Length: 241
Image 1: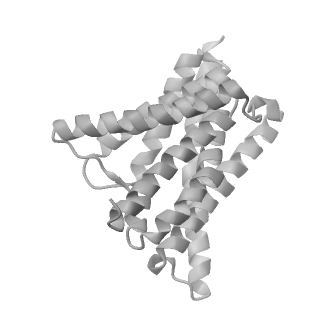
Image 2 (image 1 turned 45 degrees about the vertical axis):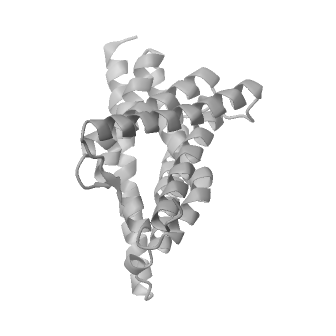
Image 3 (image 1 turned 180 degrees about the vertical axis):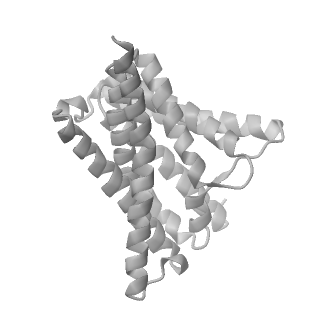
């Protein structure tokens, strides 16, 4: 494979990563201004703010750009393999969910033992204003966040890197990009710790996608992982645990 082809795929992956986030932020900001014009202030409505930003960023922007990318390159849907999970896929999915949650527990223990802190995602900060918002984020994890983030980062970005790079390198680089983009949504100390955890978790998602060749697998794993975290956050915020 020519070096120029590798460079082109890497630059494309970087552009898709940061370009999609910038565009999505603009779409969300414009929608927020339009709502303000008609008398709806989303800053005082955390549930509406989270639902709107999730649908417009991950759903509309990530999903829309993924479709446009496929059409621009004249690629068919087989570029992003998606099918109903078979028995092997189900086993991998369950294993992936357990692995992610296990890694999170281990990482939390290590962070605690070292006296470090992990930053907090702005989504959690906003939802804490009204804990009921966490309950909305649970189904959105399965319906929007998991499917469309995986479509962009594993299906499109990792898939593009996979065309010119060894699968392992494609997984690692896609995971680095996935983790790095979280920097812009973090608050508090320990941002590098959070990004490090996100990178390790992304490796699992990338590996399951490469192994099963089915986007549904990492999408469900991702959605389940987020849903468990939001459930935990809700119980913590309401004194349930």
